[in-house]
Structures are given as structure tokens and as C-alpha cells.
Length: 175
Image (tube, rainbow, N blue to C red):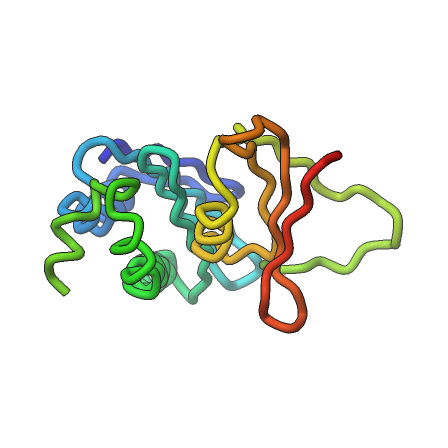
């Protein structure tokens, strides 16, 4: 797995890089060498926050955790990602051809900041991935988001899936 690092108000030394690579190395058995990971470490007062995003093929796994030190936050983030994999195991089995990189594993066992209303406080850009609505719901759940923007692979239109208050999902398709 290829790992990239960035620190915000925090210097990531060689020792920490080695520890992160060692911890994320346990995912090599699931994803192989095709996966890429990006780790961001930042300080928030006395706490250290770590954000780990793993991309394999067109699927994302993400965890954002905080702790008194960076090592405990890293341990929590690794546990969260493993939990995402376990939680979605049956969904992966149903779509095994789309998740062929998970075959070995299947055989075995947001912070919200208060700001004035109406202000854009963060901009984010990402590559839209072609997928069907069910795969978009799965991806949204794995990321822990309440909605996901994607390109519908049949119609090639930009669509949105979202989680409703009743626990079901909605799909917005342009006319």
C-alpha cells in the first residue's frame, strides 16, 4: 500500500511514518498493493486528530479519530476502518465481482463547527465515480456521510443518494 502523509500544525517524523505504515500494513492482506492511503495529522488544543483515507480501485474507506496522542488516535482509526469492512461484509459478498480485492477477507472472517449561517466554510473537490445507486449507498455508508454525489453508470448523469430520517435512502436524479 502506498501511503502519503500531511501534517497541519504537526510535523510527522520518520518514526511516526514508520508506525503509520506498520499499522496500515495490516490492510495489505485485504487490498494488496493496489491501495493508496492518505494520512493527515493535526492538533486541536491538547488533542491530536488523525484522518486516514484508503482508496482501493474506486472504493474509499475513511476514519477520523482523535486522542491524547497521535498513536492512540491512529489505533482508533485503524479499528474504525476494520469495523467498516466487517459491517459491510455481507454487502461485499453480494457484489463479490465488484469487490474481488476483498475475496481473501470474505473467506475469513464529522465534526461540525459553529459558523454564521449562509457562509461557505469549506470547499471540497473529488472525482465523480461511475456506479449504480446501490453501490453509491454502500460507499456513502462506508464513508459515514449522509449523502454522496456520483455518476450513474447507466445514464451517465450526476446523481445524489442520501440517507433519510426514517432510515431509508433517497435518490436524486436530474431530469
